[in-house]
Amino acid sequence: MNRREFLSAAAAAGQPPAQRTSMGVSPDSFAVRRPARTALEFLQFAHARGFGGVQAALPADFTAEYLKKVREFCSRTGAYWELLAPLPGEDAGTFERLVKAGKEAGAECIRSVCLVGRRYETFRSMEEWREFVRRSHRRLALAVPVAEKHRLPLGIENHKDWTAQEMPELFRKYSSEYFGACIDFGNNVSLLDEPMELIEALAPWVINTHVKDMAVQEYAEGFLLSEAPLGKGIVDLKRAVSLLRSKRPRVRFSMDTLVRDPLRIPCLTEQYWVTFEQPDARRLARMLRLVRAHPPREPLPRVTGLPREQALALEGRILDECLAYAAGPLGLA
Image (cartoon, rainbow, N blue to C red):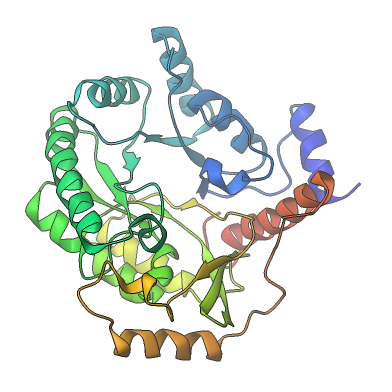
């Protein structure tokens, strides 16, 4: 019986996992397995596998009894949870309903995004990008007062949309102790921000996190980007954790390692640059130097074409490595 099988059997038998960490996990880290993303169900799933907490959504039909069960699970196990909630659309009603319920169920904060997709794939012109910026400001203007009202901090993730130079302006504009960043350690490599450059830029506003390590490999139109097992990529994880703790001592660290095919970052094409005022040759050259100086330690993971059992095994191996690194070298026991 391998370690993964042992953990599954132990969880089924009500036994503790062989390894446990205070680091939490996002549902996207199980991109192949796809467990339930809702709070109670994902808390149970993640806790059985050794994680210390989760980022999770509330079901559309949640009840007062459901919220009570979520709070009681966290109280009993010591797990934490952070609410996944979309920003408001035309009004803040639905968002406020989720925030109020999350607060009742013991959520410590909220994680949300302005953009679901990727800047260089979603927008075909500068005007499309500018409309997204205007729409994002309208949504944030609705969301921040709700977070303040219910005293539940809102962290907006750098989701391959805002650069390290652009995103701090959001936090200055809507200045609030209840509004800040969900700092993703690796996403902004796709926008040519070096990992620590992004983390240092957003650290003063950290609310919550997505811990990941990144592997890169050059290809004809730019470079490939993949989440790597923690400790095997280009992110200085120990330095990042130490810095963010110095800014917010009670910050939680939630892993967001997706096992999938490498993303193509076509930074040598004209289309990639249409949402920027002008191509930045200096940042491009710096990132390509980094890519060439850090070839991947092992082949970048790929799941397309794999039988499901093999894809699950690959995901399980990588996530097991991440869990062990978090509990060991990263000091998140």
